Image 1 (cartoon, each protein chain N blue to C red):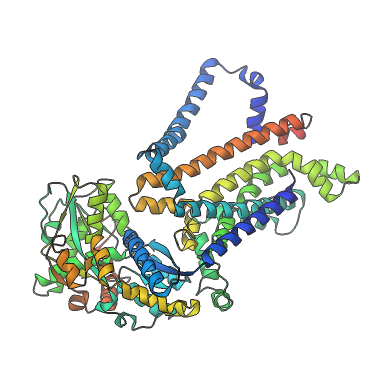
Image 2 (spheres, rainbow over the protein chains, first blue to last red):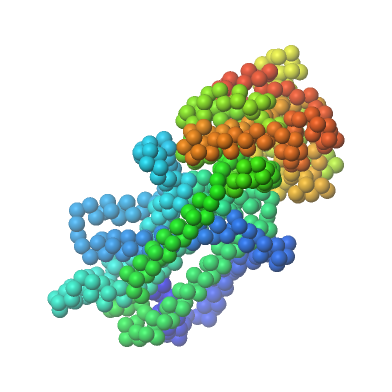
Length: 297
Length: 339
């Protein structure tokens, strides 16, 4: 997805020529209309409600001790889930795209599992495994290890729900790229790490980045699975989405939207970072070309 | 990008942050109170008052942690290992469940504190739109055709169970204890319910925010809160001639407090709920106090109402639960979604 977007951005003239003006305007109109309806309006509403009681109340809602704790917990969770699932996604897609082995199809299916089951079920799985009456519950209690209703449970549930994102992004990309260049590098005497660093990583970095962005967004925004394993202890096990729900249910609508606006701001930051990284890469390695698909043809 | 350095840095950073949260939590004693939905404001104030008193009498710093949610869901979490020092739930049945399924509290937990271990009570009243356009005065008005009634699903919501039992009790008392007539009354009542939310707070939002329905059956404290938070000019409370005495009970979770060494302070905390200071706070948050002195002071706030108890009419929560809300029970027989 990001690949085509960058190609368009790099050579707008070539692609634009040939389309009748009416079709072009129609397409742009539809796209903008859609964006306005489904992105701009909701975002504007969030900020309008958030600032309903004035800027001071807005800030007050954000620096509230429980809100700060929710932000901290969400950031910690994402800081663990994102690197972990990036590594997993790289390893899984590398294995699937570059090697043939028994059970490959099964592995691909399993990677999709978190996307196909309801997040509530994903959370319940951990209760059934690590809850007091779960499979490992008695052992955990005897050794005073807390998993569910504490940070580890929240991290586990988030990692589980978000692990397909990077792999899903990279598998088709790496499969379409084939393994010719890696094999060439190998025959020239490159080590495994060198092949990864110098050949594979540059080819997949946009897909990887895109996957990581999706992964991060979901890790910070996950509600269902985390809600089940959280225990909802204020200032301790509430993530930002859970805190928003609580505030909303307590008739503190302005505060709820103020905290929700944090997640929106976070999305803006993510998009901004993406642009920044893209630009840096383009200026550093012009000969490589930013598009992963471009290397092959 | 240097993936290895990035990974090491993030792992170190997150470990450091985890470490700091643990340190912050370890200072002084902490108590976790696992409660139901509408008690947040109440316990915020009670906790502050008790922490101050505890500091004065014992010199010990006390920090409270609160968890709120649907009563049944909260009980479930405690059974599954949420380490609550005390539970303050919507109905005794939920603490019975904790006793039965996990043995975290003894079976006779409810006899350990006065008043069935319920420091404050509430009842079930009606919230209607300003001016009471449909002229709803009492239970019988709710079953009239064309009246849209909002209540939550008694299978999932503790509060909604009180609603259901209040209606049943009313019908039973007015039909000379004829169970068939009570069942018919409740059937007609639930025919008037256009949407069953899963929790009490959800149905309040349906009524006040989304503007659905003519009347909301609600906890008295919830109705007061909705009127005060969302507009005295939009809603008014209608108190029926009779209703059920809702007793939200409290208990120490024995196995947790013994493990954490917090029994003394947890017990003192629950006893504090029965003192004049805490009763005053409860009344301020629209819970009916137990103490006569506080009752007298708030007599104007709480309309006199003929209250029956669950023990009188239904023989206790265990029996009521089994007969009405178990799978295949009376509620399943009378309510078919979608009709």
